[in-house]
Picture 1: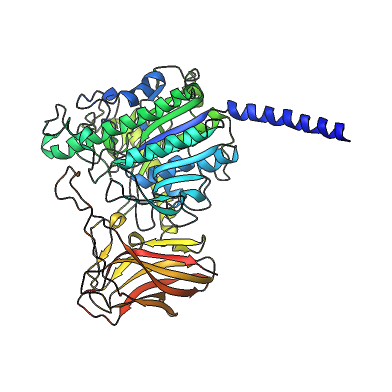
Picture 2: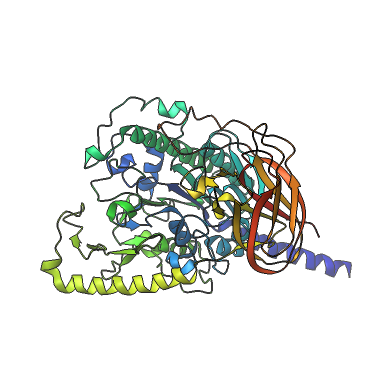
Length: 590
C-alpha cells in the first residue's frame, strides 16, 4: 500500500512537473498604455523635440503598426482593448458619471489570461468603473494599484487604490506605478504573467519632476503643430518632459525583464489611448484628442517578442485596439472565446511574417458622448469623415483634399457603412444610459463626487466631474444624490468624507434613500487642510485641485434591495456654509 502510494505520488509529481514546464513555456505579456500621448510624441516617428529610445527600441526589435487606431478619448479605448469589442457594445460611451463603466457581463482580456493560469496585475489608471463589480479586481486582475477615475488631481504621492483599499502613493505616480509593476514581475518570474501598465500621463494636470522638465524649461520646440498659432508652447514643453519620463519608466521595465532573463519569453506591447491632448507636432495629421479625424485616433502600436516577431517588421494592415485581445490570445495560444462575439481580428500571422492584407477591412471611430454622435471610417487607404468627405490617406495624410466627388461609388458605400454602424452603436449607447451605481456587491462601496448630482447651491470644484469635489453647500435645501442599485440588502455604516472651515462646524449631515430612513451625525470638528502643492505643475491656471478629507461616520443605515435615489443632505445648519465633500462610503456591517 505504501509502495503503491509512493508510485502514485511520484506519478502525480511528474505530471505536475510537466504541467509546470508547459505553464512556464507560456510567454509573459506586458502591455503599456499611455494617456493622451499622440502618435507624434515619439522620436522614432521623426519628432526631434524629444528622445524616446526605450519605446523606440520596441519597434526596432519587434513590429511597428503603420495604421493602428484607437478611440477619440480615454475610457472607450480601454474598453476596446479589454474586450476586443467596439466600446458601445460594452456599456462604455464616455469618460465620466458612469458612462465609462464596462458592463459586468463582458469578458476581459485579463479574465482570459487568468483562466489560462497567468498571474494578472494592473498598475495605473483604470477608467472603466470604480464600484464592484466594475473595479479591476473583479475584471480578472488579481493585483491592482492605481486610481479608477479618468482624471487625477495631483501626481506626487496622491491617494490611490490598492486592491480596493485606500493607500497613499509614494513619489511621482508614473514612477510609483512602475515600481509596483516591476515588483509584480519579480514576484511572478517563475510563472506566466499578464502585466497591464496603463500610465496616466501626459494627461493633465501637467505635473512632471524637475529632472525631466529642466531639459525643456524655456526651450522653443523645433517641430511645431501644423498650425503653430494654435500651439500652447508651455503645454508642449510639459508634455514632452512627461513623455521622456514615460520612456525612462518603460526602460526600467525592459531592464527588469533583461535582468530576470525573461525578455526572450515576454511579449511587450506599447500603444496610446487617443491623440495628443494639445495642439503640438503630430506628423501633420488633422485633429487631436476628442476628434475622430486621423490625429485624434491614430496611435503607435509596437509589439516585441524576440525570436518570434521579426525585428523591424512593418505591419501595413489597418488595425485597432479591438484587435489586441484576439492577437495576444493567438500569440499565447489561449482561448479567446469570452461568450460574446468580438469585433477584432487576430494579426498574429502578420506579426510572424505572413502578411495577409485585408483590403476591404474598415475600422470605425465613433464619438457618442454628448451632443450629436459622430462617426468616421478608416481603411488601408481611405478615410471617410463624419461630414462625408473622403480622403486618400496614402497621398493626403493631412486630410486636406476631399476626393468624394471623384470616387462617388466608394464614398457612397463607406457612407452607408458609417450610417449603419452609427445607428447600431447609438442604440447600444441609449440602452446603457442611466445605469445606477452598484451598492453592496462588495463589503465596501465608494460613491465619489464624480458619480453624484448636485442640487441647489452646491457646485463642483471644477467643470470636469472626474476630478472634482462638491463645494458651496450653503442651505438645508441643498443636497447631493446618487442613483444606486442596492444588490444586497442589509445594514451599512455610512461615512461621509468632508472638509469644514473653522466656525462652520455644527451642521447635521444625513444620508438615506428617498422615502426611507436616514443615518445622520453632527459635524463637531473643523477640518480645513490646504490644497496640495502645485509647484511642480508646469502649466498656469490649471483647474485641478486636491486636498485631504476627513471621515465622519453617520452611523448605521438599513438599505433594501433594489434601485433608488440615495441623498446626502443636511439640517440644523449653524453657519453660512455646511461642508465640502469628495463623496461617501458604505460598509456592510451585518
